Image: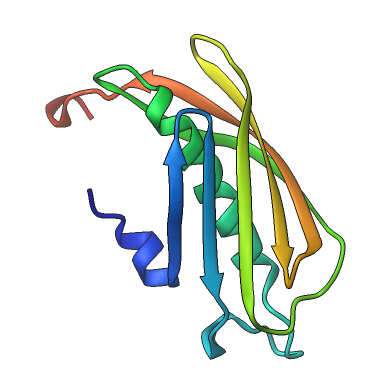
Amino acid sequence: MTFPFVEHVGMQIDERRSGHSKCSLLVAPQHFNSTGVVHGAVLFTLADTGMGAALYPTLADGEICATIEIKITYFKPVFGGTIECTSELINRGKSVAHLESALYAGGVLVAKASGNFSIFRRKSESTT
């Protein structure tokens, strides 16, 4: 399976199993904002992708998922190195799942996120 956006951003899905994932990203020049800090959207992307990676193995054949909403809290700035994200499935219903992510840089907690994802069947291309 290919993950074009994940590759574009430069992140890795290091571990993915039912209800759990670990992702990482080695900070590169394009990840910084104008003040020399890793852009918050980079951490958000790690959390969003990590949650999806943890949820995806729980889906039945023909089901897909999509982010409904994510809340992220940033605790510390990141200036470089590797960012690691661990995501866990907290609750999965028939049509909505709740997940949480913790993001670390250099072993220090830099952000936490919680999100809800919709679970649904993909409609055929001809009906969209």
